[in-house]
Image 1: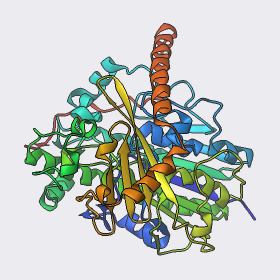
Image 2: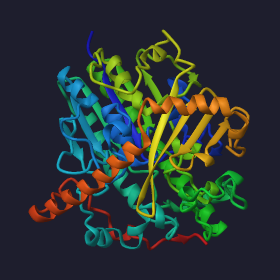
Image 3: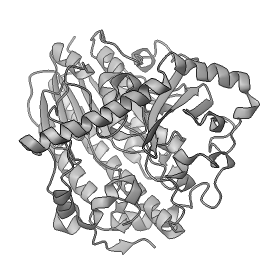
Length: 486
């Protein structure tokens, strides 16, 4: 039997709550069709609600506490094996088209080809002068602290970048290739800047509502400074709704691009007479104004839960799996679907028996997500555990602010029931002690931060290699909007 061709379409910052089947209605006909044609893991979670740690976890199959990568200023080493290395060993061409957010000189980590650059800086040093020139007024809005400073509709740099990525993918799929193919198409959307296409922006501005907990914060956040610093209390309601409208606009555009790539991939595999596996996922979600927080970096559902949908020649269709799974499962699952033994260390699980109908996920599995908060030059290890319908959240040295939610009864995470279940909390918190020790990973993070300063100094001395960063943002996509929110 020929090895199947595999394509992963990976967006950035897409919460599945914003979709044709989600809590916030977004027109996503292509993803909805993919979901009905394939199998969707409805409760998939990121390993870390932040870009680089999540992606390095996915590539290596290891939790952030094992990779040591907790921030966007870090990376796995070039001797850390990734599932892409296993695919290459098995004869695959491994092709990266677009975004993966690698940092430093190794922009491959097991990919044999890269056909489109990344939108984010690929070096240890951020080329701020270039970024300000290329992005104009939008330069600060790529990061959470200033993401709401320019909100509205107009020419979007994200749309321009993603258009280039998708066209590169379509071109590649129109060519002939001898080897079995593993392809990742990585878009930047729907990651902010919150700038939407004018027609779609106006459509969603009529549709979106003020997010949950806009007027009054939940009581359980009181005194939790680690999250309080992320709350934007001074952002007016008009700007929040504008950000939501722009976010939904970017999601609809990304949905259309997913459909284009999927149709081209199906034609590609049919011409090659090969079976296929198509996967859609994102690295994390976006709070999008809920609790007056924007972006990721929380363990609440809109930030930590991700879409994960598989479709393919031997994959059940129309199946919605409710048991919790992890982004860590991507490597073991895809390798198994390709007939490859996953014989490197992993914290993930092979979900292929679920995809072909041989088995169901373990209902008693505990899925973990990790994050490293910082406050006043100190690090605070945080983690989330998802077990059945329960979600537990805790931060080191803030254990008195721990949270427990019953998502079956309380899907909006409005009521913290931690104090009502002390024995259950003890059991849950004990599950993480075998994974890592908070003080140890906090100490290691200090070392990694120090190492990053050395790498930046070294890079300054020899000159950074900026060649794999996209720098073609057009002048009319730099913040002069057609419509401004607020």
